[in-house]
Image (cartoon, rainbow, N blue to C red; front, side):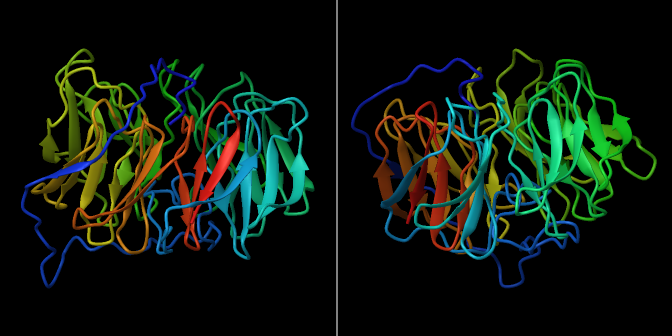
Length: 402
């Protein structure tokens, strides 16, 4: 999450994590909640092709994460950095707000090799690019949506007015692009050739939280004052949830169930974590957090066994149907800072306000912890090839952990 957008008070000190004694419930022999990769024809089959990996915003990959927990590289790439997208052949793309003459969009190869850069003189470029199956890339600044080939040639440019900011662009199975406009409201749906197809209404002053797709691609889930499901065949609201003050983008599992944080009862209420079925009915909820916790844009994650993880000052693991597996308390005054991420071994990565990165196994084992001094993590990390790509703010460093 981008903490230059909300108030944050930094805290310092030497901390440790302490597991609490709760039962660990292993998945059954025939697990009805096991997760599989969702086929998405328009998206490139690369390790991490878009914000939160896929249009369900799962934050999960089949790739291995870092084994040692050491800082392998530190790249100066801009001011505030969007989530990194990762292509095949050890290449990755970074979007960042302009800092002096530093480029907004850069392409790199592992081991600190800059391939090219594009300078758009743009601030507030928190929006991660999308890598398409056609070999192109779609990139969004507050003023423009641009389709680029990998040699930086612009296929087309769609001018955006008024300017807007979002954490991520998404794509449907046919290759249409969805952009959430936060100032005047509305989700723009733009065809692969750059023309505006239609606009999905959302309230003015909408959040910058990106929407998520159902696994079949037929519904779009939008986080604003309430969670809203849009039937894309009719372009009408299918249902509106009863929870108010949605705090995170929806995360959708491969069975179509949806997970998010909201305010309990009213916008001034306490924080509740909810799982709802594809028809909008509540499956289960947790009130593990007290009132007014700052968890905006800190998305949960679901491992390959279907177990659900979410975190503020404690990392919780629930079974997919809502049974507590375990909880792991962070250090004193230490809070989760970013969306959670999961690798192919069901290891979950937690980035905290103490500039710590924790690697936590599915059975509550802390594999390693690494501290990045004054890291001030900015947006959700990405995983590929045994590496964790961690954007930071305001020093404009991208840290690569191995």
